[in-house]
Length: 193
Image (cartoon, rainbow, N blue to C red; front, side, top):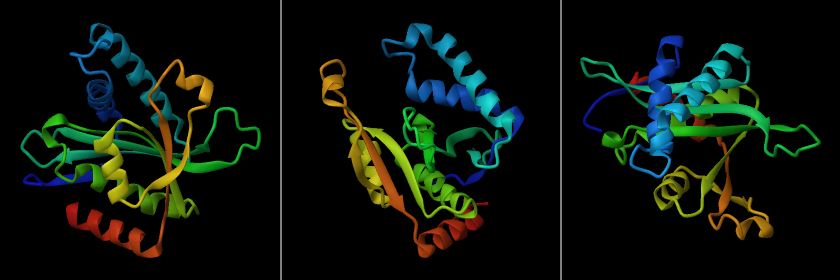
């Protein structure tokens, strides 16, 4: 990356900027949902604020801050211990990554990797040795990123009857954390901070 990026935990004053980044990443204004993007952005803001204010001991939202004079938020990621399925009766929680987003102008420059790596020591401190996430099957760029970071296919989350309604596959990926990968992530975060 040609700009220095610092990864740190979200602060309350970051929530509006993070909500805007997530809204633009997942519901771009030029998409078919663009016309309702203000409503979606408000919903994202409220959900994010609620998660951040809950102060769960097994939840973290990180932001990537540009070291430019404006110190703008250019990336974000969330990790939380939660059941893999909303239908889970067992209630077994695993560390799950969600809402990875990087500013369009900084994509493919390593910030996504930096944010993913920053989650590894966090979940280790929580006592876990693996990470999970979902990705859309047709999102080749994201699948390539996750594969390069050691995430492997765990299972296809689409029941056959759903494929008729939504042909996009939702894939569950898993990464086994080695001590070496966590030490590398910690050293990278020390160097970038």
